[in-house]
Image 1 (cartoon, one colour):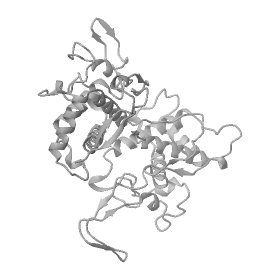
Image 2 (cartoon, helix red, strand yellow):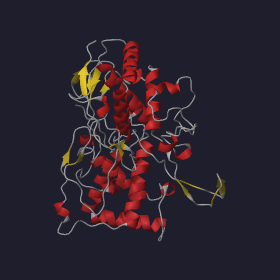
Image 3 (cartoon, helix red, strand yellow):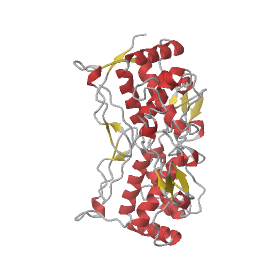
Image 4 (cartoon, helix red, strand yellow):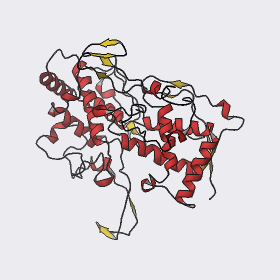
Length: 401
């Protein structure tokens, strides 16, 4: 069996931030006073237009990234030539792991490194966008996280709302000293024990949702699975040790599979709500200004007026079609459209494509003993994200090239 899952590093960062703020009431109070004084009282909501207005909040975010980078090691690098560092000879093609967790707590770089002191960044040019090697939560150079802008905006907007609209306390009988700061995890550093506040913060990785649906459809449609594997293995050649991002865009049929998965199984059934700016009339309905509009992309993707055999998984429907999911064609909107569409779309699509290429190149797939294709339950669950209600159970069989 195989388990596909993901973790939202934005949610991790927010949990660590709230933990540190609860442990440091002086910082919490200062942040809330700054936010409420800057934004004014009696606000009904806080939006992305308020981002960047509270300087102290950005100091808190920087300090959280220093102490609690969600990914402790950057993507591995490889030396291109022989180098010597601090007396160590490092030959070419050596894989290098950069431990940003240790760098963020290095006493040679930081005063009181174990203390949560946002003010250390006051009047400091140190930033987390890859130019200062003391603070590298997103990496640096060409391989740094492409979603840094979206990640920061997500964290900042969530914290603005949490600190503006609510005061926070620990559960009855619990004191600040009782907050456990033990870490766990390997790829991501999470709190070993949940942060218990009167709020629940969670995230879901839409890429993993898409991959699970794609694999479910491929197993249910062996013709498509076989065609995809044959194209991938023929195009990339046999006896490959690994498949990398350099191989993306080489297999056209895989892109058709991804499009068809997005059509039938958009990870988010509703895109971010829009609001009408003026009075409009649509199909006989009068819609006044400032009306919130919900766009149901799940329904659009299964509309028989737009699609032939809409409930069938047929990647070939996109052959010789200009239809794409980048927001220009309203028949297929898994990422939305316009200025509010998902800014991490290139990263998300690349993640799904690269993972599927590896899964289909290196493995053949079968169902557990005694299970038939007809037994795969395709029932959906969720409201914000549409996930598979029952886990997908598959058995990988290593492909002998």
